[in-house]
Image 1 (cartoon, rainbow, N blue to C red):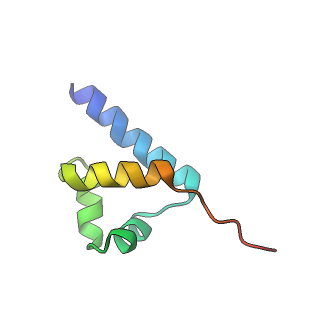
Image 2: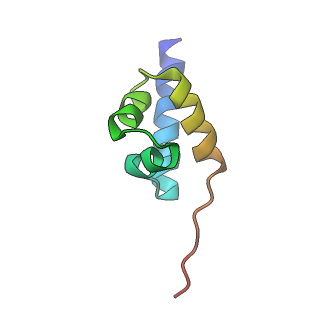
Length: 66
């Protein structure tokens, strides 16, 4: 079961990188301290991790006009 959890954490981080989201962006969106997001992505805060996973899955980057 630990392997499944690790794979999910890695996939969340990969999606964040692909979409250009940083941990600071997530902290600002959820209105929490940066360390909460960091700990959630390390697997220590399960409730916040679920919210982060849902937000990252639905996030669409905004294209800026050139």
